[in-house]
Image (cartoon, rainbow, N blue to C red; front, side, top):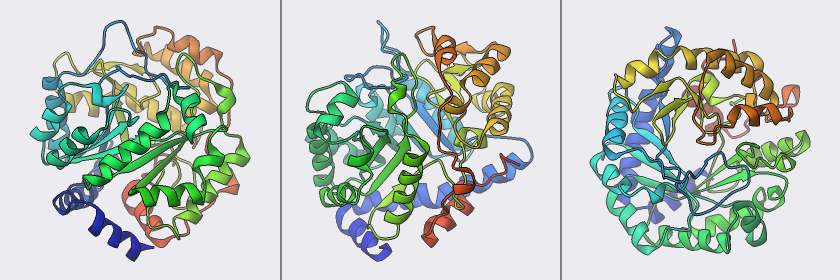
Length: 397
């Protein structure tokens, strides 16, 4: 599998881009993790991976989406983005997850990416706006990896994403990216309506044939104004998804990413570990993308590094989340999360003004904590990478 994957990367990805990614995501990424690990033991937490939702504008309306498209679009300004990125670089963080809405609706994103050639930007996109010209622009920037959402096959994708011909447009986006030799990923929010379509060997094989280099699976979380809790996976389905990923990693020449389980198969929350946090389109510093509450506003001046590392709100959130569950506090303990936000007098950053009420209405649901039924990684490389580079930083004692 490793040899086949290496051959794919060398023959399918632009060599200049591949070299840059290996240096920034690989070498610099490992150094960033080591720094995080060392400093977090001393109580200073600056996440090595930062997620930026750069706009709330979007051209689709997905089930369970937490982003509210207000009457006036909210976007992080170019100057504010530069301040955030520069602060992160000073801390050794050079990898950014770029979210929306649909991030490609931000008018200045490519200019920002060109200005920060020492960073890599992973763009979470629905794919509908990636045509030949956009894919070519990504290649010219040389530091962008598109992560295109596929939420099932034709009929399921349209239902999940609230659009028409969404699957076809996403597949066409992959083709444009492949022709331009981009390091291309596909993301799937796995739920009841699509698990039988995206968590299969046939789907993985099809993505490989189309030129996809990594798959990112994450479980569906019922949040936002239209949460659709009926789509949440039950415990058996979560176990099936985990087993599928562990098995496919041993055979398929593609990288299979998750952010929910460590090398021993124990559940975890990246926000509880402090390995990643989120900055929303209005500039608020949040625990993670679907938890739309904050105390720190990064757009109104102040030292960004100090605001992040000295955030008592984030520190207490990490402690609360880690003590509540190894899984997802939103899903398993929504009322405890609501109580925490009330006690913290946190700002509702959703743009809806209803985030506390949404938590009040939520019922406890299973997330990804499999307890004693956990399934350890079986491929040695995934075990090594998760153990030493990504997880296991003592958040759970």
